Image 1 (cartoon, protein in one colour):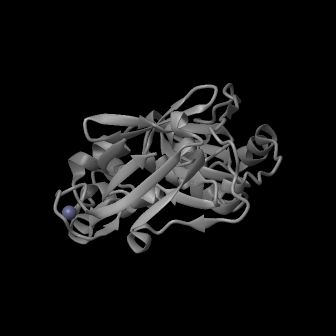
Image 2: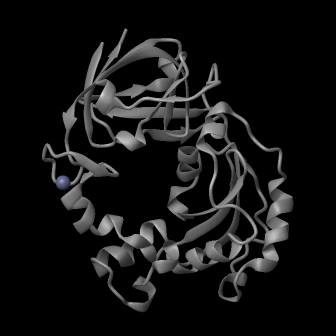
Length: 265
Ligand SMILES: [Zn+2]
């Protein structure tokens, strides 16, 4: 069976095991059902997710021009502490920024290799954690806007990492840290403006299991632009990565905006 699509990140659903879906033309693929099957991915060109034109993809599925003019990729996305919509100050498009920034956000701890702190819109839980390949996660504060989440993350970064090793995550090398204990330790460092939002009664750990039959031992990243065609046996899906038997990994999200043909053999 052959499927055409412009790649977008996989959609997920948290069950006993994460379910992974990929939109393809007139259909969708469920990767959980394709484990142990031979897949071929071939690169057919680019299609910017914003303007739809066949232009080289720069970042996040957008061509260079769209990336720099779109309100959806302002600096406050990667650095929430730079959010200003709560003060009615515009970055690129105040209406859009208000819609995204002025909604509940969560600062959390996730365990994907080491413990890391992160920020997400509340509506993106548990999607965000799954996309990062976290095995466990716990919420710390739930605040009414992105700015408060950002300054909380910045304060906590002095005491816990905000980065994680994606290679270790893929190899399933995970520290055995206790998230409840870590959260207790960090409580004292939440900035004053966000203290009242500490989730005192929500110390629940979310556990996430991925459909993986075999983890890679060495990591070979598939560069589809260079390789043009790759084929291999699918052994698992974790985060936004497809994991193949020959240690090749393919980050679907990093290839957004690429037109591909996927053949299931
Ligand atoms: Zn574009």
